[in-house]
Length: 180
Image (tube, rainbow, N blue to C red):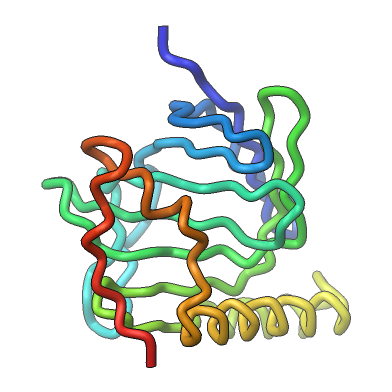
């Protein structure tokens, strides 16, 4: 029987995604799991390129105690599309359950190293409608800037991300990110 990890992915004000995903690796403070994108109303395009749609596969990396997660996105044919980074308020683990609180901002990194900050409008609307306070707003931007700066210096993503892929652990080491 396949091991599972229970995910509680919370979104302000009251949305909760709850599901059981295939556990790929339990590294203690890092969980690697696999899931499919489902329930999207429209595909996600970044810079004119379709990067996520229903039926695509993700390997996600949850870093306990950190304020981000990383999704390695693969299309229906298994082609690597890029990295999707969620900016989070927290990542907690209790036993076989992961809990995360999304802070609206996301980052997408193409295999060629192009990097895009996403969903700034959602974060601004959350502040405008007082779903979050200015402190949380500033925190989300600060964390996103930190990740982008680390990426540009070649310090992000963590090495563990390249040790796992759809076909087998350790075969995504041919990534050619160009650090600018």
